[in-house]
Image 1 (cartoon, helix red, strand yellow):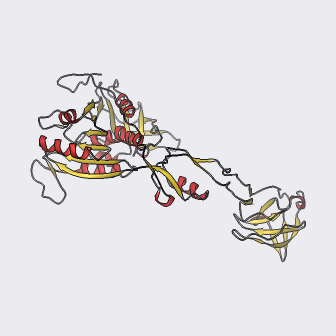
Image 2 (image 1 turned 180 degrees about the vertical axis):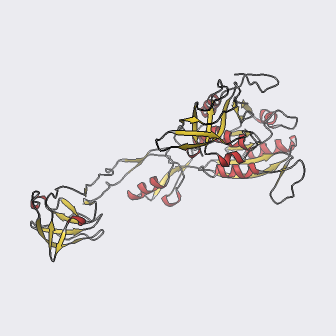
Image 3 (image 1 turned 135 degrees about the vertical axis):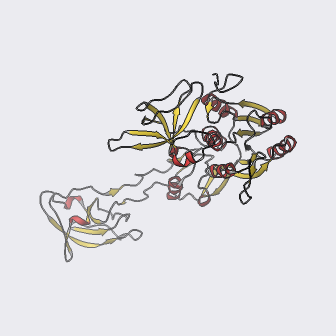
Length: 414
């Protein structure tokens, strides 16, 4: 693939091919540990989890009402039964239900022996100690059977599942209080550039505040890992090399922003080649072409572009799947849908583009998307206005108003 923007045209690897190569190189961590369930949110299971019990454990009521014996139900006319007692959730009715009687029962309460139907409380009429049931009452309704959710020894969550609120709740419902999880990857990140200022310093000509540091910290917060902000390193080749060499020794992943292009002060590619091996440099994507991936010993290295939009895009499309692979999370494919574009979009052939867009849906269920405006890789405000990427393939040229385009909603991204 030829990049038309390069002064020296060279074949660039596509984003899909780059990701495929990276995921083939990265191996999931083997270390694991057992932790308490209440600390396991966001962690990744290192083994299958099976239930020691069936849920529901007992036959119980699905709603508030009256437990009856089906033989007492007279479907073609109203009938009355004598109230014999109450079954509460956690305090069941003692004994068996006798013919001609009913039991007041609440949601989740155990069904008494003999009872096989529950009638909603809204359908009955109370006449002292007699409960009147209407004509048309149906038998065998509103009961939860043992094992209806899952049987004993059922697979609750497979190895590689990231534990969210639903998974945590499911495991807790089975009485599981500890889980085996993959150990947290150690990730260090830093920014590179003489122009970067920390917040609180006065802004002067030629300088800019280091937004990437905060963006990257936020992006990493969505993963099960231990992240370390290792600061800002100026455009000094010796200092950069020393810094990278040091942090690569005790981290599984190092991520840098800036210094990955071809300028006189962009040293990352040369340093990585000297310390380890450069596997990928430059991909056919816009924004985000100067991405670098390599290895230093057992450490994986990602050199991301310095422009904030390029950095966010390459993190989401390349680094995020790689981190999932490293942490043992099962791979997933982001949701992509077709929408009708309501703008004319500028596009040159040669690189796949991820333009920022605003996705909406009308009352008929049709998806529409419009551009956020300027698509410069430095226009960070476009990421705040957008709720999706408009994905334009490498062979695509300009897009006309009314054309169908592929869209990736931000809600599916890390």
